[in-house]
Length: 81
Image (cartoon, rainbow, N blue to C red; front, top):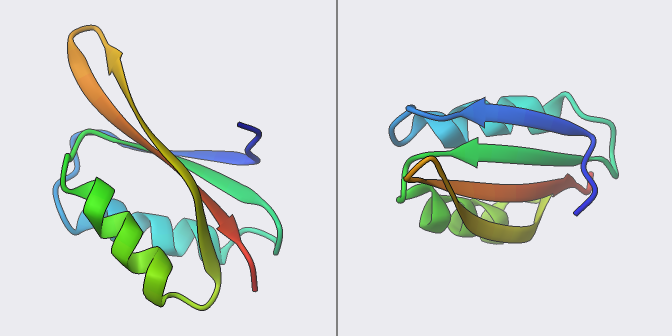
């Protein structure tokens, strides 16, 4: 998936991945995509819930990748407004 910027929030616990992502998305130009890499399993549901209620964000995709024996939760967010 194409993206414009990456936000590494590995090691951050809820709600920090979401808090930092909100700030990063608000600084992106409309139409650009932010890739967020988290280690908090709860971020999957958090980002889904945020995308449902937010007026300026679309959750394009989520994936789980294993890197060095650790699961990473990757979220792709597009700024829509």
